Length: 184
Image (cartoon, rainbow, N blue to C red; front, side):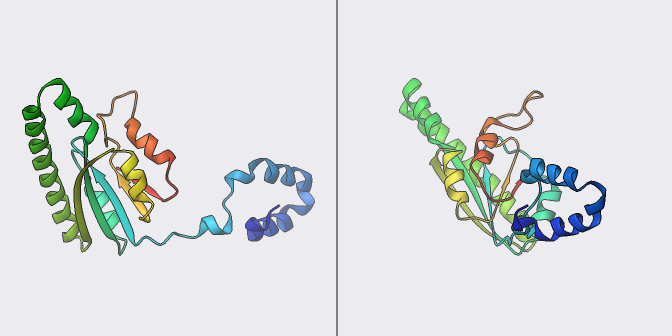
């Protein structure tokens, strides 16, 4: 029994000592990784929230604004334009087609960033916006290192289907993060 579980362990130990001490020790041994340590039970302080957006993020539920506004946090809205897709369009179609595609994507990104920023600001949050070319998963993972929380749409990076309730990109991002995540 590690010291991390101190309080609970000693309480349970005293309470059930005579009943099934051996059984209790077995349970602790087998389920140790599922029990929270003192450190894990502390509520993390959320000062900054990263919120990645793209063409697949259609609607942001009102509950998300309410949840995020409960924190006194700054929010970075980031719209990442997939550089590989642009390169593909340029190679398969033309430079002109690629430029047109880029312009449309940037306009769509700016509109989405501005709409969400207004809603978040009306909830009293400080909001920054960024739009750039990059890798939608790698850049989010890299950016998240400097944030206390990630708020991400289950559609980020791809349309979701009945068989896959989360986009593959969201799954990839989640596997690399240590911070709390809100998926909407």
